[in-house]
Image 1 (cartoon, rainbow, N blue to C red):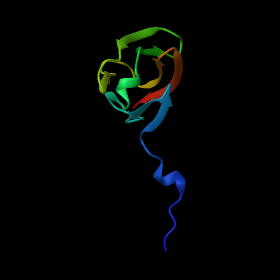
Image 2: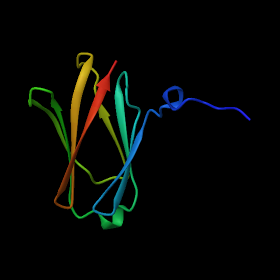
Image 3: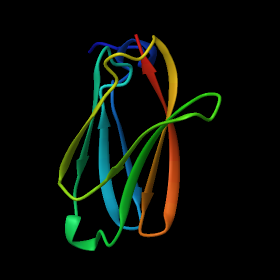
Length: 99
């Protein structure tokens, strides 16, 4: 039997459920792109993705209308950004790290 420390197996993605819509967001940290895979698209009435700097500057806005959305961070400096996703009137924020 072997034991692996949780610190050594930190996944590079996270899965969230917002308004019965499940999203997998990966990789995080990233070097260029973040991918959102959306399950239960049939329950999605309205979806908006926004990418911000930590200072609150809006960098991108996208409508979520497909099951997979790729968000490009190409051309952005290394650092931490805020990914804001609104699904059916509920909004969640995540920190995204670009290496």
